[in-house]
Length: 363
Image (cartoon, rainbow, N blue to C red):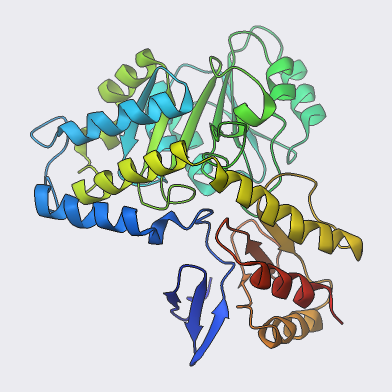
């Protein structure tokens, strides 16, 4: 991967590049809580009251009441027994796998799973089998081939970041034996999908008792860090068995204070999710009208894959002409020659949404 040029984000939904202010549809701060005045004030207050760093593992001398408070509020928001914080959004999957190592005969993983799930699978200490992307029939084929005497764990994203597609979790659970476990990385679904913003399982209308849900706080919640959501027994097992938990310095306390405020805002203001849904529908409808292949999901991610090399430059010019930053990315596991990915937020204006739609449908 080539390191991209730095951007200066301004006014919550814009960036400044080479002296031009452009509408910004990059990143995954779906509600722009990362620049919400109350969240920023919580960071400053957290710094004033608690300092920057506890400088020790929670299991030694680095625990703090704010960590436990945020975990309780996360568990309540997502309707689960327990939550366990991680210092980055990449770590929760590794923590789960370290805790459950040796408990499964096989790990089945979506071929396009996030890198953190791919890394986590290595810690499970069992054979790893890839199944076709979001293909329930292929998963069933592997399950039937292995037979009922094996104990399985399935690893998948909830909502896939490359195009906003959603894993068919209900179908997966129906196909799996009763003793199987489903580990769903819901970094992009958490806070966004479902009636209550609880993520992909909420969107699918399924209970979470057979699902281990991992999330990040850097997407919908706009802050930083991550968490494992599940049972109290799982939390205790992770604390007992995961070297990441044992030896890792936890989140800086100002960020924990900010996450508490972010969670409060998202929990009390359902209008944020309504605006996000309306903005998403507006752009996707405009793209479908001209025949562009856009995923039929509530995901606020829009992916455009250029068919020819020349289309990249043409589309970049169209976007810049409409004052939109061209979010072109080359990501491991994504299209070989890169693609455009745009993330709608609840805070984009009608003019910005129209500019994006016009740029993508013109020419």
